[in-house]
Length: 285
Image 1 (cartoon, rainbow, N blue to C red):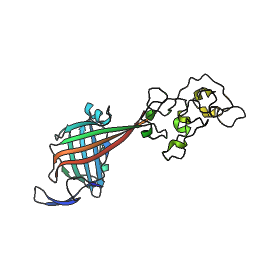
Image 2: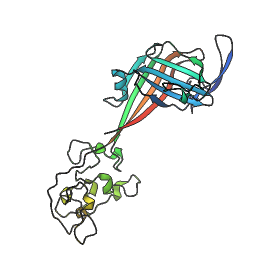
Image 3: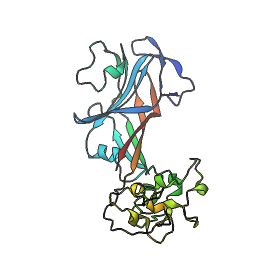
Image 4: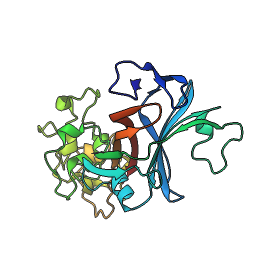
């Protein structure tokens, strides 16, 4: 757990409030942010604790800038907002019960109430949005950034069928023992090109994708009479069929929205710079 007040050396410290009382403030949040959706015109990113019941919330408008934050065109894009106490607000609150029963609710739990609320009227929010695409094909992204094997316009790291043979890369066993070393990738015809990069897996002279006898996009159910393996892995049969079905490509883009607040001043603490946390989510394409 990281301390919210990154400029201080201790998680627990004493501060004087305006009324002369001394508070023992112990703010430890995990910096894994959650989000209330922007259905009411605003988004809320928040972090909560249960012992004691506390929350950090950041509210900002659901507008074009917010869409750039949550769905950036380029990984590493940065956006900035000014805290103004109105459309952009940051709050530290304490509660009588679990804040997760209070936040994001149209009608909050009546058994939970806000005990203390601290809010700066100025400051800056800096959002850094990164994303990573992953086709989940069993080949690490780091090994797929160099090209587009089948020339279909989809880079290998986003292509779940790298060689375009209608057999998903994952099903061609690029890493049989899942150790990240592809030197043992399946190579049915032993020609030095692993199946996931080979357009003719069994080396029978007929392209793998043309051995789909029933044209249903599943080459594993096309087995010749008396055979025990699919045609595309059987070099004893080389019939070619008119194939019109092509499996659609799919990949996942995982976003990480990293949020830092600068120059905020509350009655219980002030800091030039601290990490609010990271909000992470994924979209399937």
